Amino acid sequence: MDPIDSFFRYSRRSSREILIQNPHTALTLGGDAAIVYQSMITSDTLDTDACVQQTLDLAAAGCQLVRITAQTVRHAANLENISKALRQQGCHVPLVADIHFKPEAAMEAAKWVEVVRVNPGNYADSKKFKIREYTEDQYQEELHRIESKFAPLVELCKRLGRVIRIGTNHGSLSDRIMNRFGDTPLGMVESALEFAHIARKLDFHQFKFSMKSSNPKVMIECYRLLVARLKSLGPDWHYPIHLGVTEAGDGEDGRVKSAIGIGALLCDGLGDTIRVSLTEDAPNEIPVCRDLLEQIPRLTQQQQDFDATPSFDPFHYTRRASMACELNTGLACGGEQTIRVLGDADQQRLYPVGDSGKASLQVEGNSSDGVILALDPTADRFELPEEVSLLTVADGTKLPVITAFRLLASRLQSMGCEYPILLKDTFKPEPGLDSSIALLRSSVALGSLLCDGIGDAILVRNEPDASKAIQLAYTILQAAGCRTFKTDYVACPSCGRTLFDLQSVTAAIRSRTGHLSGVKIAIMGCIVNGPGEMADADFGYVGGAPGKINLYVGKQPVQFNIPQAEAVDRLIDLIREHGKWQDPVLQAD
Image 1 (cartoon, rainbow, N blue to C red):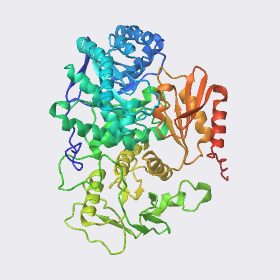
Image 2 (cartoon, rainbow, N blue to C red):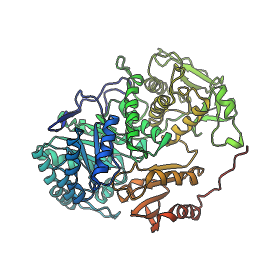
Image 3 (cartoon, rainbow, N blue to C red):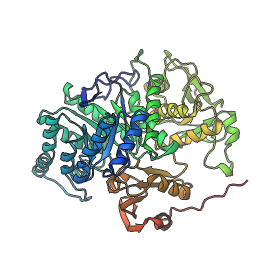
């Protein structure tokens, strides 16, 4: 069953309305309500004044839902003081308690906040990365044990009028789920549905889902699979959905990665609430949420549908098969080649192929290359040359970019044509478009298609600054998991559990390792975000205790309780030991 009605025409998914409310305000999720944006404070939950101030700052920025970690019963109990102080100051924004590992903390938090977020991967299980085979009887026994842990919270939330967020995270699934389904989108969905079945058994429906990953491709697949499963379970399973790319990082990288994952699903009509998770001050997330939502009507259309079959499997990434052609630079495009970056004359002058001083950023073909053939995907038939050409959508096409290229790929598939495709981020560049908006539009349009497996080359034209456009093109390719040109960072956005200053540490690690193309480094504030949620990182820098850092190779801890002052140097030593270090290349003046 497809997750949405059409991949060519926008229609927002119809979801069940749930109400998040306190005596002073009510926030509707789902139904016809506007999509809600939220964030999370970073202060220690025991520091009432700091938590209140950060919440006020977020509310002033326009945040509609504020999450606060509650790692112990003591922390959860202090939510009472935080909530009372906020209400006394006239701030009535609903609060979410973030729970990991401690059902008793969830029970306490539910007394004081409007929403309780639980992670099925660790709410009733302690993750030990053990491999075990379960008989069907043993598996059912485990489900009964989980119900005994979760049902009391459901009953309490039902009595108090609270909402529950059932939030699975890639890499933090329980050992039981991992052993049956693996660390997969299916495992994430099954884990969440186990908790949903318990809630429904108790006639509780005030819940929403989230399926977060630091990898946009995985995240997109998870949500599509979840929605398809909910559709198959029946018309009353249409619960609201929260969207987010977890550990997206900071700066341009974090914004691009978030825009790809969240934007792709918003354009599919999915999502009732979103968070852009940045390793920055939390109020910085809100303008990005707002700007991203504002782009969706410009990137979709609701009028015209097409009798066409998508060329891609929405649940499993596979790059579209294509033949290779030669660009005027002499480089091959399509086939088994990496996805190429094309540019106009100005971009090519700045980043010519073969410039050793700018080897990581090169324009690998010109957008006016004679091998490129522009087509109208709505035409009744295509006239294609016998010689393999690089196909693209003609400028002036009245369809949005995502719709147009999905239609082109579908038409080519029906013809049995495997000519390569050049993706463009716009068919009508807007002069003077602000760079922050250009970044979002290009990331959503190109990133969505790349995650669908469509595209053998990309061209960025939304960004008017030629140097920024090429940087953005490569950043989109890396964020979509298609090509690596610099170090890849997985960095959590910080919260009250964090054991060091994530922003300064991330900046320090980036300054020392930013030249290591092909290396992925995870920077995690606490054990909740590592080792599991580091997913496929090569190396991990994880807060183990106040002032102490644990270092990982993959998911394996190798060094413990390193003084923070030594930890970055020790990380670099570890990268050297595993043959991943390269000395930075000094640029000529």
